[in-house]
Length: 142
Image (tube, one colour):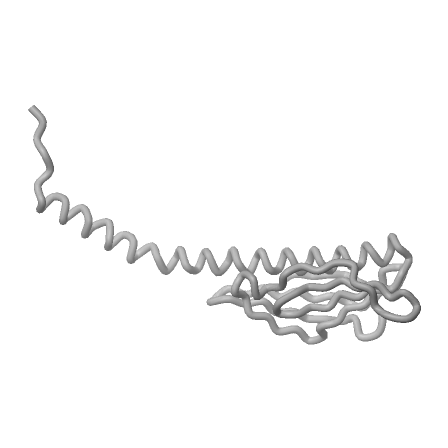
């Protein structure tokens, strides 16, 4: 003969599950912040690599414009900048960004053109990532 659960047993089980969720939620939110910052950092480093790689393969001057809402790659065609690619920025993941130089330009051999040194800090909650690029085109992630 099967015995059903009592209302008291169900109430205790639901209460214990609530306490467990309340304890786990802050860690889960921290984990979600970490994922958002990592995705934004990966997208930014990829955009830098695409811009530098495009400059070398096309033997052209290429710039990456880093904005909160978008990452844009443009090519210089002797008169003006022509759009080559555009991706959503860190804003799509709810990540805040501070950037020292929002425009990074690479010459045809992949070296920085003009003021190419840039420091980008991405943050959300307690998580943060720092990305720097040097005049020689090297990208470092901290």
